[in-house]
Amino acid sequence: MIVDCHFHVDETMLTLDKMMESMEHHHIAKTVLISPMNETMFEVESTFQHNLQRLFRILILHVPTVGLKIYDGLVTDGKLNLYGNAYKVLTEPNNKVVEEAITRFPDRFLGWATVNPLLHESIEEVKRYLEKPGFVGVKAHPFMHQYSIQTLDPVAEMCEKLGKPMIIHLSAEKDSYKYLPENYPDLKLIYAHAGLPFWKNLWKYISNKPNVYVDTSSDYLNPSIVKQTVKALGYEKVLYGCDGPYGMTKFNEYDYAEKKSWIKQLPITDSEKECILGKNFLQLIGGTE
Ligand SMILES: [Zn+2]
Image (cartoon, rainbow, N blue to C red; front, side, top):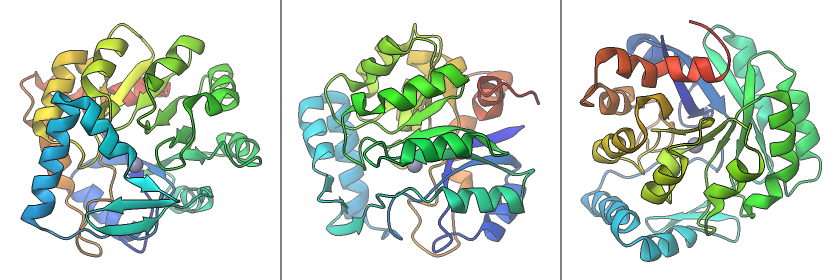
């Protein structure tokens, strides 16, 4: 069973009906949805953009001090700045749209309840969402919402107690990937985008941490990074995800084939690929196939 563990709902970019149709076509049984993080963001297909992404990956991998600095500057004053455009970051998570999608298609969608710990009522809100059908855990975004990892203390404590996983998109804060595993050793954690922006150092650090995983989602990555991730961590700690609809250039045209091919072309056995494509995640949330 293929499960995409990381995808946002934004019907201004991709409708749920179109998503269902594409999931069917690509044999994706379930998708775990997240509220939108920013306003509608279509990208332009350009060599310039492609080269910038390449340069960014090279810097993060080989000159991390420079890479982290660039990454840190991508979000300023509540806006995400990409390729000369600025997109408003949504401060208040809209978990309602995830709930509505799960209610419409309960067999196909699960949900992450997004928290912004800077908003006082947000922690209580995610607690309520975790009791609703289909919600598997909590999404936190220290990068977009711009806070220190320690701000997540009450959320991490709650999730550890409830046995619910957290999925986190890290900021460039120094060593922030160590904080939660060290303070909440039983917390199940997924670092989004293979642990961006720390990649190699993070892989080394989490390789012996049994509850800590990474996902393979987003255009921040490419087949080579995914390959290096699996080589560093082993297939058991890696989870397939897309991070759509981000990266789209046109309304309702999401390319599901690409991210799936990154897993398909890995130099591992088919049953190991099946683990990355869904089994690892289902095991992590305590479900069975
Ligand atoms: Zn995402």
